[in-house]
Image 1 (cartoon, rainbow, N blue to C red):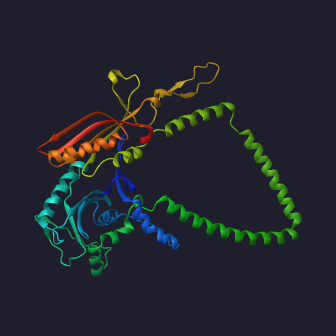
Image 2 (image 1 turned 135 degrees about the horizontal axis):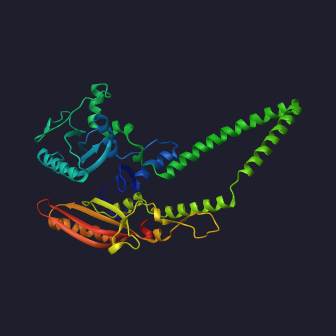
Image 3 (image 1 turned 120 degrees about the vertical axis):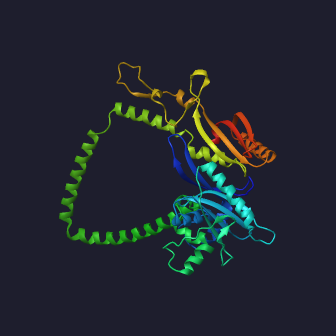
Length: 405
């Protein structure tokens, strides 16, 4: 997410990483909206159109995806900081920023420890084993062969035709990877896309207007000399339209069909009010502070009338018994929606993870609970800490409100 204060509006790029039966896994990459606007507004004023604007982590991940489809760690030395990025199949999975020493250089001993820690985090969070490590440095010409006991991987991809392109890629991987980035990581906001669309529409409308004027003039000349033929063609077309209209009227739905369609529309309207996984993920992710990750998330519906107050998992679609047959014996049986299904509230079971000493983890998770409580009703809050793992977990149930979806 980045180290930004709560009052900074963010633009979120959300990529579906894994789709399950009831739970989906998403990757979220965020940038401050003002940073994007500052770059795109001058180009818009100069009538310059961009096809894409992507975060550097997405671009570097896309470049690694051209090198290997396996999980890979990329250490990127930029101006003033070192970023450790883990990607798989061209998609970023995890990113961590590490400071440089007082001379602005990389301490390879500390870097080795940081890389090992990132491996453990990715293994625990994504169940991925990272075996390959890449090292990018914009300054050094002679890159190291090892970081401590970890050997650096320097592949020779065929799409880098010569040595100059190879050097450029290892100094600026974010530039080379731009052309391979998935469209989900395009950060151009909707208002700029609408502006580009209006520009295209205006050009097309102007072209059609000119073509219409030319065609209208040609049609006038043709009609003046071929009036009888045109009139006969018009009468045949009119008769064809009348026949088609009569066929359509005969095929119009009956009152019974219209009633069934309205019942289906009512069901769809109720379903549209259901919160989506995307909205749940968004509202939770913006209230999780730095240093805390979402380890597990599950949305469930409190079953109306269930035994012992147990909840039943919700897939966002009414169960079969949400539809009952009509009690009107004089009418054909029709599907009617059991409204009680939608009145049973959704509950999100959330587990947060933070690593560090007990006091640091405790402060982080308490802050996360305070932030979440502003938007959700928290129930069954449990805190635990394991000394051997140096990791703490906060488990709670979030009762959704209308404002949170």
